[in-house]
Image 1 (cartoon, one colour):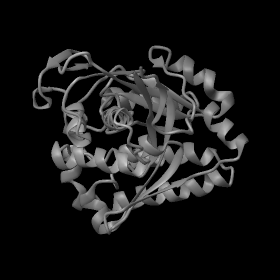
Image 2: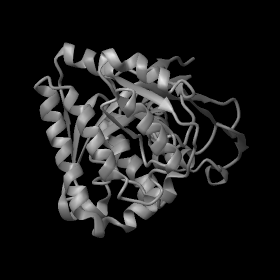
Image 3: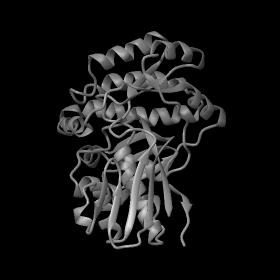
Amino acid sequence: MIIVQTPLRISFFGGGTDFSDYYLDQGGCVLSTTIDKYIFVTIKQRFDDYLRVGWTKTEIVETVDEIQHELIREALKTTGIKKGIEITTMGDIPAGTGLGSSSTVTIGALHAMYSFINHTASPRQLAEEACKIEIDILNKPIGVQDQYIAAYGGLRLIEFNQNNTVTTKRVDLDPLVKQGLNENLLLFYTGMKRQASDILGEQQDNIKSRLPILSELKSMAYAAADELKAGNIDFIGKTLHDSWKLKKQLASKISNGAIDQIYETARDAGALGGKLTGAGGGGFLLLYCRYDKRDKVRKALSGLREIPIKLEPAGSKVIFDYRR
């Protein structure tokens, strides 16, 4: 049996500039980090030639084409595995909550399958093939940041170039700065699930009419990386607030009255800024607040479930490999 652990992510700035319709013309950039919440993918040899896939349902089929879990199905086709395996996926956080779980599953599945056939896949290979599966084959209206951050891990500035290449740069922080981020970032579950594809589809359609906003969001990603390296962590909070006001203009369903009320309650209690992670519309609310304001913010949002998080330095990795 092989177990692969792949981290989920929070994206700080630049979301929306990772759509090819934008970056092939303008160039894009995001500042994103993996966190200590994970998707686990297990794979093992079966005693027969059937394929068993365990997720929210259990599938036992004879051929890859019969598999309903589209990410697993296409990952099997990509890696060339055709029969006789069991594969399961499980996560620390529910899907559809804005932490990049779909792409994380794809990265983890590819990594597990390649490990199973004794092929060492680089983070770049995993990310590129995950993008091909999700965007080119399955036609999902998504960007390309989640695949890269899940594969590489850490706090990274990810640039999407006009020549259709992607550059990832690790943002190395002073240990005290990293500790400050771990202490000052709070994550709350709004209790609202949503279909990211609906929001992202509209956002993609709106790209040409939102170019100035996207350009500003991109600039914030670069500025935030520089400020973090300089030790100015409060810049994150203030800029998250400015970024959130801009992001809400990218599509009509990114926020709603209930979310706006939660956010204003957090701000009134002392949060400097925040945003919904991922596409928006629900899922998790990321907040930045100074250490001495944390308990006041928690009390104000006591009706929401808080998920403790820390920055995760590693990307997708094999954590167990035992074969007889």
